[in-house]
Length: 106
Image (cartoon, rainbow, N blue to C red; front, top):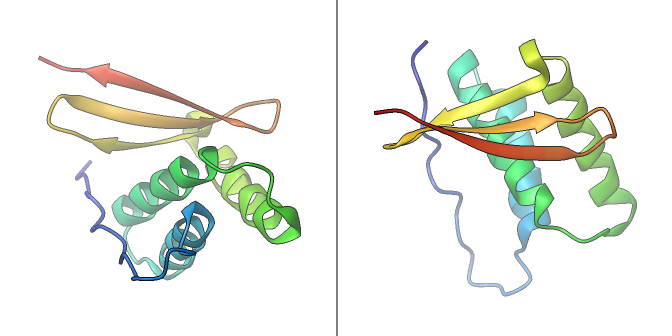
């Protein structure tokens, strides 16, 4: 499968642009993405930002749940991106959270 490395999300000048904003942008880009490779990479980015958040109210919980469900529906309930050293994975756990792991290839 061809791997897609997501472009960095825009970094606005506003200090209030946080991980929730980046997760929401990744989610919107995921919904609009045409290829499976792009969708997988964008879900990875959204989950990565959501894992860095503290509980942040209804809006954050809704995005968290949508991303978790989208990953959970995938094969093995995980998404990955290719890196120079191997692959990075995010998995949707049975407890409703995310876990991460890396596979290093030589």
